Amino acid sequence: MTDDRERWALILGASSGMGEATARTLAAAGFNICGIHLDFRAGLAHVAEITAAIEAEGVQAIYINMNAADDEKRASALATLRERFDASRAAGRDPFVKVVMHSLAFGSLVPFLTEDPKAGADRKKMEMTQDVMANSLVYWVQDLWRGGFLGRGSRIFAMTSEGSSRVVPSYGVVSSAKAALESHTRQLAMELARLGTGVTANTIRAGVTLTPALMKIPEKDAIIEAATRRNPTGRMTTPQDVAGTILALCGDGTEFINGEVIGVDGGEFITGS
Ligand SMILES: NC(=O)c1ccc[n+]([C@@H]2O[C@H](COP(=O)([O-])OP(=O)(O)OC[C@H]3O[C@@H](n4cnc5c(N)ncnc54)[C@H](O)[C@@H]3O)[C@@H](O)[C@H]2O)c1
Image 1 (tube, helix red, strand yellow):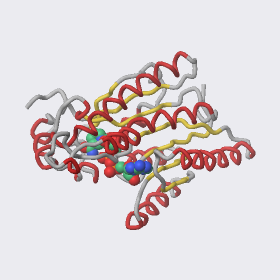
Image 2 (cartoon, rainbow, N blue to C red; image 1 turned 120 degrees about the horizontal axis):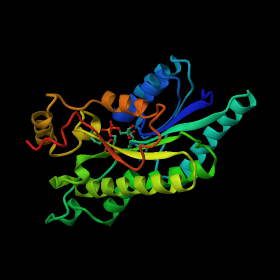
Image 3 (cartoon, protein in one colour; image 1 turned 90 degrees about the vertical axis):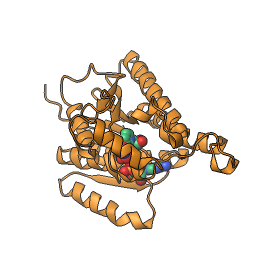
């Protein structure tokens, strides 16, 4: 049976890295894109390039510069999306959010144990990182589900890393957020299935990928060296590897993949040295 609903992708973190690549790839496949991002003025020209490229595919692009963890801004962004949905319905179309991607990189990269308390993890850094990089997924999905944006066949993807189960000196705060994000995604997968929604939720564990987020990690040089050495393909993961996987996981016959952590890394994780 053909599905002629109007497909939208809501991408949290859509102006760079994996989120940008996925926005461009899904747009080329006919998805309309609602992209949430947090950029200073210097980054806005790049955002304009992305939206122009998306619109050149003949689909709609809504890009909103905001903190994805802000409750009021989330409500306002969803009101904007609802206006587009209302306009589509008035024109006889049947829109739904086919893809939700959580691809936010915004965390404190500091160790727990530092002589100077200001240089180490504290409650504010822990809570802010957890809120943006993990808990925000739950709040977005709650509002999308309650607001009727999701439909049978919708797919939720959250981005995790090997750092959710490995230790790196500066990554402790983010690591705990990644572990929580994986847990939140499993919980959503189970609840959405039990409610009979036909919506799935999975976590994508990307290999080490050259993006601005990676370049902020103090141990980046050692991480890149290890990834290049360990990856049996001889190269690192690219944002396009992730984007292509997400498009494939939107295809027919994938609806029973649910609550999983799916590696997209060419075999980097399984290779010890
Ligand atoms: N780069 C890697 O090696 C790697 C590996 C595995 C997983 N990941 C994960 O993939 C996700 C995307 O990472 P990336 O490397 O593509 O990062 P990136 O820095 O290229 O992109 C991050 C995006 O998040 C947006 N953003 C950050 N904070 C935000 C906030 N508070 N509100 C709204 N938007 C915000 C930015 O504007 C940008 O669009 C992250 O969760 C990251 O931890 C990255």
